[in-house]
Length: 124
Image (cartoon, helix red, strand yellow):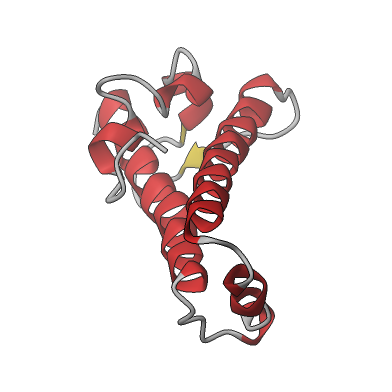
């Protein structure tokens, strides 16, 4: 696999497992169908919101999910101590951070990770 393929494989898994799973949980909470004990009180709080207020709350939550993912990637991009590394069964480990010319920027663009890999699209 070349560096672009490795970067895209990481991006796909990062977006699907970190972002999409969080948005799915958010929508479950907003819809009142939370099954976890950690979030069972949230539907009661959401029920006090108007439909417009609930839509705004979901919009804000999704914006902060994306901001958090951006900040996590930016942290790795700047860090001299920590890195994200793909370790193949055979071959040489590849730094995901070094494979990109701007790891946090991989999320957003016409052909960025959110646009290509998220089930929820790029927009908030």
